[in-house]
Amino acid sequence: TVTRLPGKYRVGGDQALLFLDGVRSRLSIVGLDRDSYYEIISQAADVGIAGGTIYDALIAGCAVQIRATTLYTWNVRHFAALPMARRLTVRTP
Image (cartoon, rainbow, N blue to C red; front, side):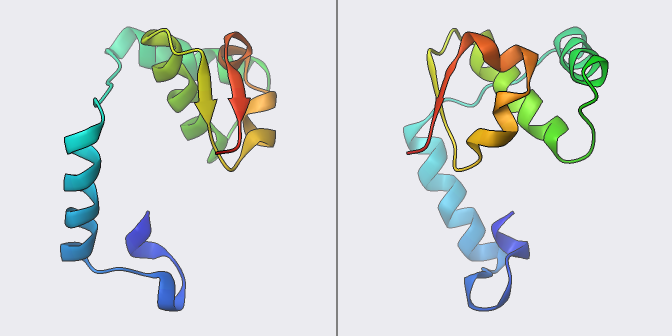
């Protein structure tokens, strides 16, 4: 999160909220129901995904849920191993 970045890149809670307000005004928030959440984690576990990459799996699952065709990330390598991301084109911005 932006409030945990190192040194000069770290922002306070008030700045983080301003950032989130900007995001919310431009994008739709996507959530998973409990069955989808479980299924995504189960698929990730089946291929040995663990740790922080589970969050990438959940992000990819959200993208698939809304039928996105492209997912933009600075972390393309992490998404390459995710079964749920195989239906997406994963690119850097």
